[in-house]
Amino acid sequence: MTTLDQLKEIYNLPLTTLILRAQEVHHRHQDPAGVQLCTLKSIKTGKCSEDCKYCPQSAHNDTGLEPEKLLDTERVMFDARRAKADGATRFCMGAAWRKVYTNSQFENILETVSSVKALDLEVCCTLGMLDVNQARALKDAGCDVYNHNIDSSREFYSKIITTRTYDDRLNTIKNVREAGMEVCCGGILGMGESVDDRLKMLLELANMDPQPDSVPINALVAVKGTPLEDQPFVDSIEFVRTIATARIAMPYSIVRLSAGRSQMSEEMHALCYLAGANSIFLGDRLLTTENPRQHEDRKLLDKLGLHDMHPDKAREIHARSKAQSESCGCESASAESAVVVEAGKAAEPVLS
Ligand code: SF4
Image 1 (cartoon, helix red, strand yellow):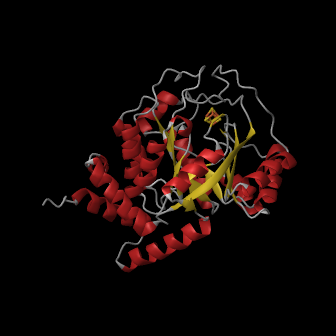
Image 2 (cartoon, protein in one colour; image 1 turned 90 degrees about the vertical axis):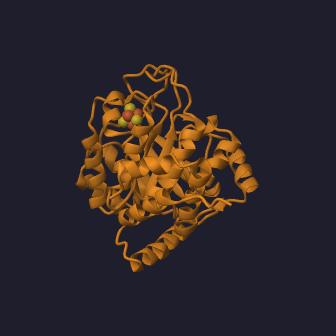
Image 3 (cartoon, protein in one colour; image 1 turned 90 degrees about the horizontal axis):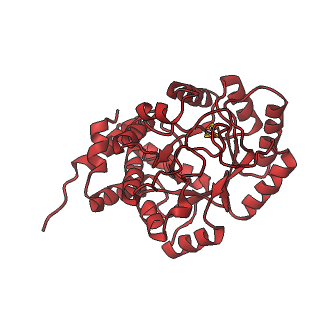
């Protein structure tokens, strides 16, 4: 088990040492220069009954967003084909729902999932809460991954969302695991939470067994008309420290830089990659908010000497490093991460 005190010690290391520790973990357990490219498409937009204070799609927030009904399979396939041609290896589909209902719309989604899977893309869905039977149906249709974020610490969560509980989130994640899909689970920084809240969120994720396969770290995009519209953009160094702490605590997870990248400089992106981030979303929009232009992302990756990472290559590296960890007595990713965290925390700089 990783503890909050361990994460605090890691987070507060001198930035130089923190980045070094994160890079050591990254080089051992990940493709050190690989970045997985994903695309996230909104397949049903707006009018969501949940009251997430950060979200432009909540019916509780007056953001002027134009709602859209569930898109049909052909419409989604157009974007999926384009995403693949642009180099994305994962296609994520998001619907602004509180929960999934087993009805004709869900049937449509299952058909869309199967069609996207046939393009030889990894398929991820984020559709709100779901039960284990719905999770199994998604898995059977070809869905590889389900995204469901815990957003923040348990304590801060109720200040941001009142229409569902933290345990509702954890329960859906349990159903996803039970159905055999991979879990994508992370949170948002810059909503007014403390550094402790961020570390408690990482602690919750790091102590899941198994740990999430991917961990999206979002920076709040303060959208006009939401209760968080006046929040300043998250401090860039705090953001980078959080990414590095996530990398050290979750050595095998893909850490995804998600929302808020349009407000990040090239230098902040570079620091995030140095801290252990190894995935981004390509495309001009991320659900309903702005995302960097694809050619800008490509240009920066080239400038930094980073390459597209195929998920199979990432899995191969993870399997190899897990086998090595097991041979040294760590049986699970969380046990391994506790060892890594301990090593990072205890590291002493060499003084000349
Ligand atoms: S559940 Fe998702 S779509 Fe609905 S308000 Fe919350 S973040 Fe937005």
